Image (tube, rainbow, N blue to C red; front, side, top):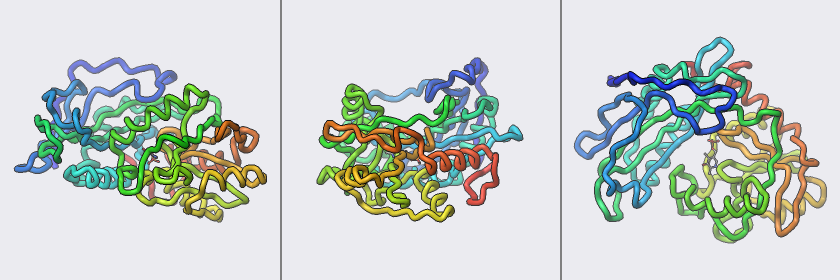
Length: 353
Ligand SMILES: *Cc1c(COP(=O)(O)O)cnc(C)c1O
């Protein structure tokens, strides 16, 4: 695949690596590809990062037909750039596309676009400990048309954002509100797809949880409002009596790549992992009986996020004295060591660019 490159002749000043935060800065270029019925996906190109020109009637603005992914590129100790499980993200983008009636893309073509874009903007990959380059591929429906149907024209884009260390002073346990009214997804819906509407629909619960003094919500299932699903935009794990529990993939939860890496590592360490439904009531009973040893959430942004408190029915259930659990810390240390190339990658998760 030949990628046309138009270089940015006004590159930006790079931000301070010690104050990047998350999602605030964007690099000098973006990757773009178009779709129409006649040519399919075509015209792969790298252009200066900048505003898009879209018709106000572009379907994505009205009916939300779009999908996205999130992964990271890391600078290793040799100064080279490496990606973590990128092919899994690209395959998942196609699963989301399939659900949203968006034409799927060739995984190799997407990978080549991401690779060439990152290499062109390679100076933007930060090197301070804990920093990385966040990669955001996404697809939008662009037909200038009002009416609910799948579009016939799309754009695939990749933008890059240098991001800071999520945890500055070690892993911080979070306060999580158990949401019993609002729901995120139902079986048969779009919960397993990374599509904007899921996140728009989640804002209200998040805002209300923040107002109550919690960082995030724990979602329960959409039908009976009792089975544990996810924490915000991350998967949830609970260590109970030595075994680690997480919700099964049955269509309403997102199949997290960090979730999968977590399960793989835990099993490799000889721990039993149970992918079974659990009610919030059962979890509270385990907590009361002193069997809930650790709770944590997993996702690309924070990798492992320990849960210190679960707010449920007016009570705060404190987990592991609001301290980071041993397994949570070991998962974080191991996963980040693989991502930054500090230990051998036994699982074939890393691709060097
Ligand atoms: C992206 C996401 C996750 C985490 O997936 P990773 O691949 O581990 O980053 C979990 N839940 C939801 C709802 C998400 O959007």
